[in-house]
Image 1 (cartoon, rainbow, N blue to C red):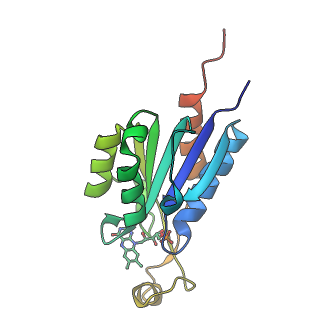
Image 2 (image 1 turned 90 degrees about the vertical axis):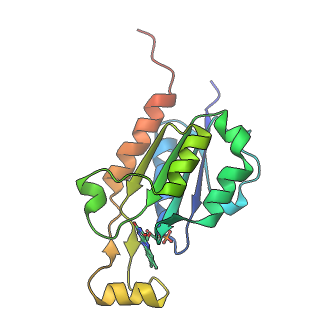
Length: 169
Ligand SMILES: Cc1cc2nc3c(=O)[nH]c(=O)nc-3n(C[C@H](O)[C@H](O)[C@H](O)COP(=O)(O)O)c2cc1C
């Protein structure tokens, strides 16, 4: 039987969100799906996919423009297929302690696309992250890699089980 294809698209400034998207893609591949993991800016046509996962890094409470534009550009086709959203993310353990609601822009995307779910994963700022804000946060002990592979994989398995046709009894 032909494998279902899932697009995992992401808006990432410094790579942490790209890493989350890759983990989601790997997990879905292990669960039997064919996946393409691509930057949101490169997404042109989603109609060849059976489902889409779209995620973005959060900066000052906003999704990345690339991810928002991707959602807008493909709104009609996305609204017609199963879509899940994710955000990344707090650089502390808050995303692991409780669910974090989508920021306003992501909530709007959810509504427009009738997305099936949204999750906020922990993010990452390390001494490698460029920019003075990142450097200042790291210097003040507010950085670190808070991406939790178990959380990411569990969420992706949830998508797989929603998409997989039920096994015959
Ligand atoms: C200037 C700046 C602003 C940030 N603003 C937020 C924010 O509003 N909410 C949040 O959860 N994380 C915030 N973060 C943390 C980033 O979202 C986190 O580091 C993310 O994983 C970065 O993803 P990227 O490497 O894919 O760009 C901010 C980080 C920086 C450097």
